[in-house]
Amino acid sequence: MVTGATFAAHPSPEGGTALLTAFGASVGLWWTYFGSSAEAGSRVIAASDDPGRLARSAYTFLHLPMVAGIVVSAVADELVIHHPGGHMAPGTATAILGGPALFLIGHALFRRAVWGRVPRSHLAGVLVLAALGAIAPPAPPLALAACATATVAGVAVWAAVVRSGEPQAA
Image 1 (spheres, one colour):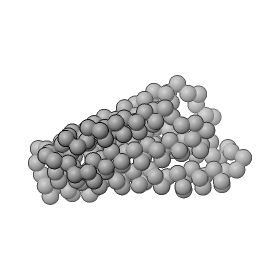
Image 2 (tube, rainbow, N blue to C red):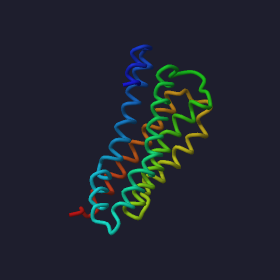
Image 3 (cartoon, rainbow, N blue to C red):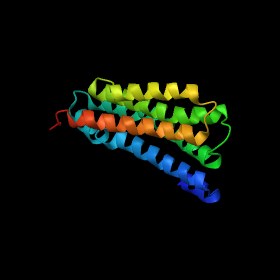
Image 4 (cartoon, rainbow, N blue to C red):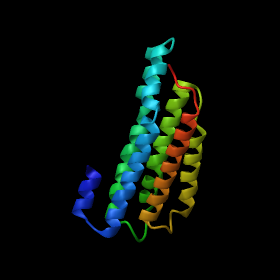
């Protein structure tokens, strides 16, 4: 809602593109989490020997970096909508890349706690986001945000393809 309100206060073609980029990133993060993790995770936790401990770790502590990533991403979206072109401040670049990275790290830790492994898709996504930091200074904010969104979308698709090949829990 804040992203839409920010665009409404500063409408422009570039801002509209930034709004669509922000929406795409939100869909990618949502898909990464809700594609199967949320529901399948609750089934695994319910069937575990110590569901209270696992649920506390997975749904309390390990959701903090995911939520922080979503909040930082929302801040980045607002900054990009305000200033889609031109020079990028270091804090803007950090928010654009750090928000999705925090989310992916948190989700990878969640999957490790629940399934005992870290998805390669998430590690690759975090590495790509870190590499994008090298091109951040000369890039306009909208271009960097589009690259971050493409990275998140790539992770979501990769994770979905891998999940489709996994046996389904009963």
